[in-house]
Image 1: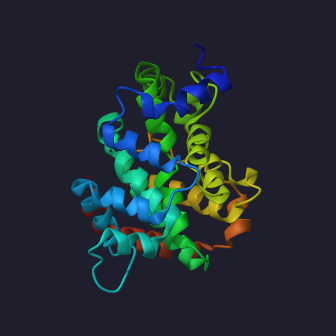
Image 2: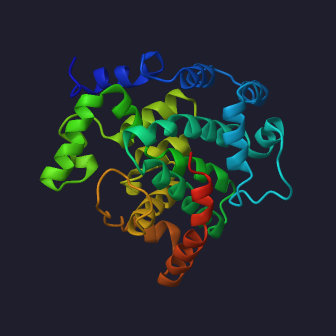
Length: 278
């Protein structure tokens, strides 16, 4: 089967829950969230029945990033407060990104910092649902994990090529696959029934100018990715800090002082990200 054929690649990616190397809990999560209609109650019961998973979710919810008054001690309370999209994002994030520790050291730290930065920017811009942008930041690189899980030998070639050829991870992926991690992540976000704004934030996080339905949210994830890379927080697969897409300034209307303040807020949040390391 040819990984350079986009339809073949998509079929392989979307069968991730049947891979023998996929952890059982992740398989169960994927089967559950792929249902045509899934309720908060069903998700809450599923999480509550797995003590380790419940602990991780509550740890995320009780971090200062969410800022809820008082400690959230029950999963059902957390799901009601956060809503379906965010709790699904956290559920996938805390499960899939466990694999990051083995597959790409530093990717979880990069992702959680990107999520926190995205939420800080979303709040600054007065977005109605900053937690949805947090979920997009957390999952923006999920395609990397899935490609590593489904094609470990081929992805090892990608990583070797980055080191030898001095190219970005997206450029190396294009040499081996019909789609980069950004497109792969968006396929899964669609399959997992996430809303279009989250799908586009993942798909276009390197090219926010292509987003038609969620340009603001996508620009925020794009900027967050670059700021986190520039600060050296975690590892996103290559050592480069990409150029900022010029449309970001148009969408976000941020000046140099705004950027400095955001960087300061991210720096102040570093202790939180260390607490959330799995």
